[in-house]
Image (tube, rainbow, N blue to C red):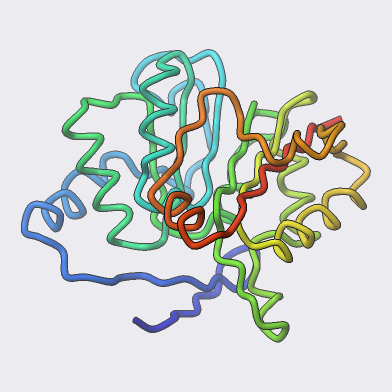
Length: 230
């Protein structure tokens, strides 16, 4: 698997685009269902008409992987509208299969860069933004490729409502420290944790993803960070 670099509207985007060969039905979903669910970044965002039915709030998940968390949240909160971002084709194919199988009606998708979606969304429009287990780009020379940066923190602040939350999870300590440092120096956010146990405890209703189960099995402790928009 190779890395692909694409110039996006908010800067350079780095990500794995495709892994295992898709099955025939997965390919069909990419070609037929994804275009119907993809957000149109070339047109102004109208949240009132984004979903098939009116919703009472909005949630964004950047880099949903195989879609386990996004599927569970969308089914558990049918009154909310979700947008999921995932550049990895195989992850997108899995998400589309779940949407089809479970008739999920409150999810829209973007098969690309989360920074582009943040730039497209209206100001103070979202209740929660999730960034769960992003690629940590562990080498120092690659840290500029991490999704969390001063620029994206500003974009998150623009999109979140006052009192809205940015929720971040990682099993890589130095990326959690990196994220904490970037958010703490922002004047727009406050760190919600009061005790150490708070960042070791996942959010209400949380169920581990396959990635998290693997991390725990290999001895890595997840960290759950919540930042509230002032």
